[in-house]
Length: 622
Image 1 (cartoon, one colour):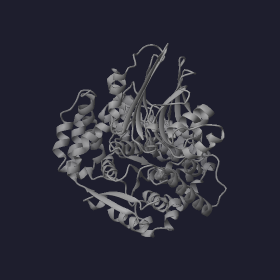
Image 2: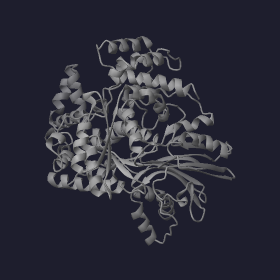
Image 3: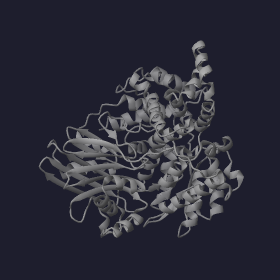
């Protein structure tokens, strides 16, 4: 696990030198504290420089250093991530005549590209990754990202000049415009993060998951190399499905245990982390270490459940308890995200990563389980939509009724019948940030207040091409929104700030491709969220642990704002700023409502605080 950055120029617009690359790489110090490397090449109308900061996980020798050149010096790569199936790929390539000099997964990518080409290479890789591979002979550059965007990859492109990095802060040394993207900002105020392919800056983008950019002297082309297909459904029975899912999840955990350094597990006591820890303890060569974080507030504290699971699986369990004084890290943590990010569970994620990082360099987590097996209320709404969609024989009378009435309910039901993207997208709102009408109160700019609506509808439109059922549309779209934009960003930055590699077995390619073949009435059998994983867990844990009410990985930020964090909030927010003309009368109104306990605006106020902290400590500090 590492950090990468670089510059590619097909137009003689930029002088690539050691100093520029080193400035870009400074932002990657926590991602790669063990080693650093650089390479340069200046050719006529083709200049490039690659930077690499290394966190050593596999092949700890000097042979694993990057950027890494192919044997014939015909290509070079800078790579961030882990390829879980690289031993199997290596065996296949050796049978085809390949010769390897290292035991690293990086060399397997280089050799596989030379034998198979970029498309086959990307389809064969299993793991999390972002890399740039330069083919010297073909004067072609490939910049690729993994299937779910577990590893970040930002880029800037202008006049055949291309810059990329794992960290958005790398671009500050390039003199790029700091114009704020109001679409990305509006999405942030609603969803606590920036969108799938946009950043807070208009001139810096993200390479979408499961995609790569191909650069040549003719220009750039963005290509998608993989997508989920929900149309073909399994012929297995429900009981066979449960058994096969368990087999696939255990194999996924086995894959993610591969490492030349110690591995542990995050164990909240929730269903997903408990299953991952169970299979890890079963398949790890020594006693597994598990790590939990809790709070003094009982409603936010899951430590007793983590302890109970640990006792059953026989792990060496470790706990920390957070209190208001732990917010002292907040501004430093927010800086590490590079752009505004307001999921407050980043704070406990940071602390449990720091805690675990003292004992292990790799940890497994349960992220993705809720999106794959329907753990949120969004999917209950999706199930109701699906059940209504099944009554399409009512479509004609409903259409007539819609013409006779202005009833919102009739409009809604008619929209579900027709798979109206706007109606289906309404289920994706998490009701944590600002709703569209509230966004308009904050800033009356259409780019700003319509941003979440546009993003959610776009996610639905893309999903409609790969699905038949309404329920599957929401499964697909939630992966492309909250999982990619929020949860995976949260865990990546919080863990890498502590130079800890966090892996996600639930996003295993085989497991998630199988899950997409499951009928909706398997995934939510009898209306039960996560029915399949609950049935798997019943074999190993008590029903009290399996069927307890879902408890998010939250933090009592609302209570802290009313007391120990009150002055800090007011100092940062009510200094105000003129970069974006927010409505401070409205902000003061919801702040007073929160302080008086009249309404709980915890998430909205945290979004406001994070934005102002970002403006003060990053935007204005550049």
